[in-house]
Amino acid sequence: MTNPPSEPPPPTVDEPIAADTLPVRIAAAEAMRRLNHAMVAHETDPELLQRIAREANATAAIVEAGARRQRPIRQMKTQLWQTTPEEGQRLAHFEECMVSGRANPMGIAMQPRRQGDRIVADVNFGAAFEGAPKRAHGGAVAAVMDDIMGYVLLLTATPAFTGRLSISYRAPTPVQTDLVASAWMDRRDGRKVFLVGDLRTAEGDLIAEADALFVAIPRERLT
Ligand SMILES: CCCCCCCC/C=C\CCCCCCCC(=O)SCCNC(=O)CCNC(=O)[C@H](O)C(C)(C)COP(=O)(O)OP(=O)(O)OC[C@H]1O[C@@H](n2cnc3c(N)ncnc32)[C@H](O)[C@@H]1OP(=O)(O)O
Image (cartoon, rainbow, N blue to C red; front, side):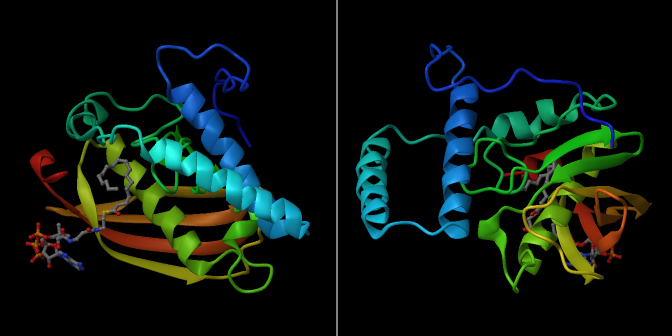
């Protein structure tokens, strides 16, 4: 598997906070995702759980007292479509995306990048994404395939919404395992963009196949 070009790691909690708070948001979201999965995957003393509840509620109250954030819609309508992603480039359409956003504290944190005419992503479903025993929830798998197919639209600068999404679950999706999702365009018929993709183990064994119809829309409708 080829790794994307290396990026600076998120700062540790002790580093000074830069004017751009994104790296700190990412670090905080990463820590919260780690805790979420740890709570599901490990036995925990009731006293520690009580402490977690107390401290999380106290912290939430402080955060909720802050100003409301606005989703950067303008960026999604303009910049996102202005340049074609470069080979190997780590992609993010929205850093709080529940599938591929690094700054979403309860997301899957899939890491998509361009590979030729395809989008390829490393994905690892943490313990909190278990559905059927030892398997990632089928809806989480569908979310990954929907999102990665969405990134294919960037290659042709075609804003579109998912109209129909179909998943064939061919084998159990293991949790806590490095997997690879891929997606590419099958064909286009006017506004109808037909995308396909799959999810495989790191060794290349097929887990799930996806096909979808995305309907192209004018950028102004991306609200
Ligand atoms: C997070 C969102 C950001 C998205 C922005 C893209 C950024 C990309 C960059 C980076 C990756 C992003 C990753 C995101 C991935 C996740 C994407 C989502 O989750 S999208 C949200 C879920 N989907 C909806 O909310 C759609 C709800 N539905 C609608 O808004 C409309 O129904 C829409 C736009 C799909 C179509 O409505 P009309 O009025 O514009 O078009 P009409 O005239 O009805 O259809 C045109 C043609 O398409 C067919 N069609 C339309 N909808 C269909 C459907 N549901 N199934 C089958 N065919 C359908 C029709 O039959 C028609 O075909 P004929 O020309 O007659 O041959």
